[in-house]
Length: 405
Image (cartoon, rainbow, N blue to C red; front, top):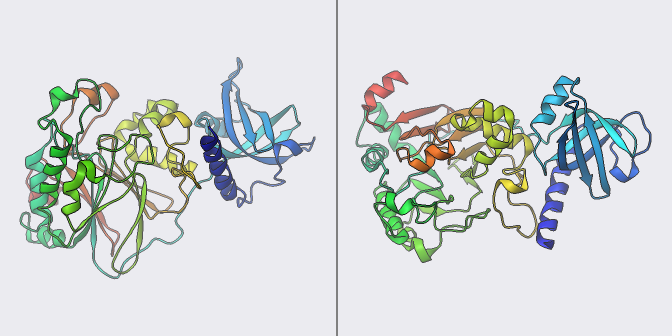
């Protein structure tokens, strides 16, 4: 229990340090030092959230000195909308007034995140993003994945596309590269390969077909043969020994912050995205708007909160020594996610958001959890021009796809 307490304290102090820089939080004080001032500011973690019979919202806020109730009046529409999207365990800033008994919220501030200078390389290199290959599943779209491999090797497509393919120097594989075994009840009946080691051998064979000058960066997801608890370690050689034979493959944790670029270094935050289902189900605006179909909307939410799983129950996690591993400490240039099997490109405060597609047709389990896959799409990013486009490796002609892009 002490490890979890330490983890929450680390998260609180880290995000508090960000919020303290916000000039809007005037007369900042701790909960234990609240007096009867007309206006002051607090930074606290959300311990509880309730809706009163009058539809006002009461947040129970705590810091390292105490706990207090904070009322958000429904008539303050802008503040009320912010309060509606708050999850438990978030660290937030409050502009308020009141007393030691209760405070009245005038505004809510989130940690937020922003890139001030968008990077560009002087070298024309490309990054490709994929995830959720699900090797071993009877729904794995192997022929389409082989078409992608042929493209990245410069063997298919128009002359322009072939030249473009050969400029891809980095391939990010953001989790669930195999389907695993026993991940959910009844999965065995939907597997072509029922041994995890054999699944990784097949994956290694496929990735080994990619030209050797492409650096492949691969993180695990909840289908991979590592612990489900986040942060997830790299795939070990006990199951994935075959992966260790690929010289151009780099295994990283989930989440991971990776720097790439032969000239300017781009920081890419990889996160498979296990928390996204829980976030969608917990936030009314996301659930109503069917955010399962729009994964970057969920990523924007997480960036605003500077945490990949703001509420304790969103993911199973293992507290680490030092900082909370799911706290977004460094500002990335690009965020790469998977899990929802929907490709989407967006931007938030200068940060490029890339949600990857999948290489698996819809499964009964996906239908149950609300996933609506759009497979075989690959976003590619030009590090020199910052142009990003989506290539389609489903059953369409690449040259026709280029005309319609």
